[in-house]
Amino acid sequence: MSSLEDYQYLWDGSSPTWCLLETKPWNQEENRFIIFNSQNPIESPAINWRYKLAVQSKMIEAGIRIISLDEQLEDPVREYCRQEGRDEEMIRRTFDYLIERWEIFVKKVLSGTYRGRDDYLYDLGFRSYLEQLIEFAGDMTPSSIKKQMYQLDSELKTILQPSSVGSIWGAEFTNELYSREKHWYYFMLPTYTAEVWEREVRAIREGRVRLSREGL
Image 1: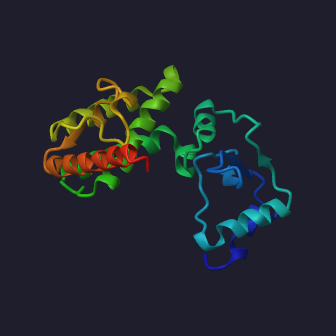
Image 2 (image 1 turned 180 degrees about the horizontal axis):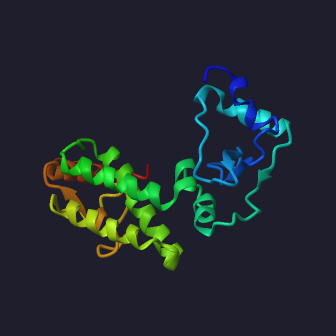
């Protein structure tokens, strides 16, 4: 698609199931919407990023339905993701999206892909999101999701070793923020990069302690 008018079906009334779903904003100064199909929530229009905001504006001008944060979705799992401010694909696909991201992460770790600690930690966050969603959903969680998660966990642990610096999530954070048993993935590192990353974490923490002592 190459022009704004290619997306006219989203606001001209010819496809009435499309609406705007308000999501929790990153800050109080902005409204965040995703284009949402109320009949098929996992469907996502392939909109060129250049036209995304313009399409949303056209939909608002046309009076297309907006599902506000005060209006609950029928699916409580999807609603939870929305209220937590998760990204569009996580809201649409929930468990499928998160388990897919966790599988990609595990494969990358096993293949020795990660060299940067920040990228590793960002992607590792999807494991935490998955666990949070499972805890929220309870019996609504598909049994296949739990089974696949535990299997991937086992595969990942074959290449991890305990971290000598404790929790590695946010070098400035204290280890008390996380439980070694529940959040085991924050207390372990890939064997092929553990030594380097542990040095980085120590250096960051020592720098923050020094600045704190100096009152900066």
